Length: 67
Image 1: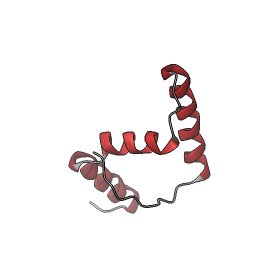
Image 2 (image 1 turned 60 degrees about the horizontal axis):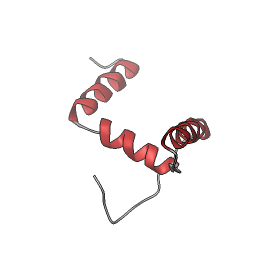
Image 3 (image 1 turned 135 degrees about the horizontal axis):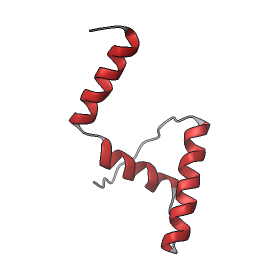
Image 4 (image 1 turned 30 degrees about the vertical axis):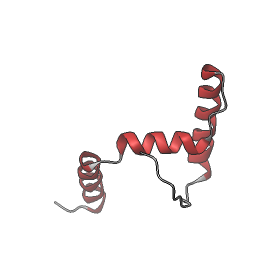
């Protein structure tokens, strides 16, 4: 899923560091530079769907004590 427009997204430093480590690892294995944004876009494209929305809803409700 590719788009001509882009936006910024705020993430924690820890998550960015994880994505940087993954990007470096994938870059080494693929013999090309893989950007951190490619890692985040891959994960979002694979997991941003309605089934995930249902899981997120269940988890949020559980944390807030809602049935």
